[in-house]
Image (cartoon, rainbow, N blue to C red):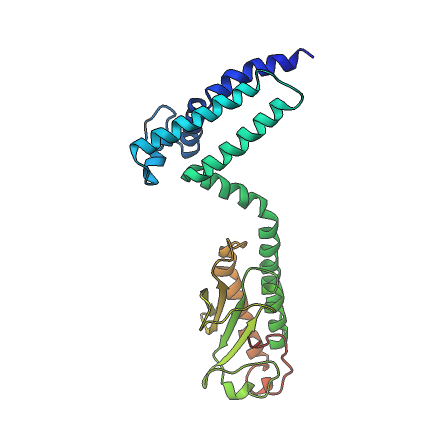
Length: 281
């Protein structure tokens, strides 16, 4: 029963001087995050940030006086604490401070928020990385082209990419009768896959691409794999190093192996490849 009056007695002066306390706390935390000395000077204080946003000196002073008045007014509510008054005041202060810091757009807190969000997304990154690693291992034992197509679709169907193009150094005529394939070149077999429901269209919707050259372990070039992703989809939840290191070589080795087995070339004619489908918008 004695704790509540003590907490209120401490909270009243803290809330009354909320603005200078907040300024000091922000400065210390910012410098610790950025690795700078705590007592070093900078031009990132609250009044500096307000000036950077286009306010005049007079407007900045008015804003700071207004914020100080709000802190002082909230501290008055603590003079006659009743029930949940302290909790309500602290909740209002917390929300107001959070919104104010967001509005000031400190780079340090933006980076801290990004790291925290990245930590929460680690599970999804783990799942996507595992899918690429699993595809890499399966490609090492793939024995036909249809199996390679199934592996690719399974690997990219659940991650952040919206489409891919697999271009092989083979004659398009050899695959003209294959089911589920769209031949878009006279001299190459171009396999296209688009995620179900994706609105990706290279002509109308902006997207970025990642082109992977497919070079086997014996330095024979087998073609390329180009991945497409729409802009505005958030951070890529995948370790990009997995796609640029062992995965392209495993795919190229698999293509090289099926050629050695006699699957690619004449034996590919009429094969029921159905995994990589060209889905029209």
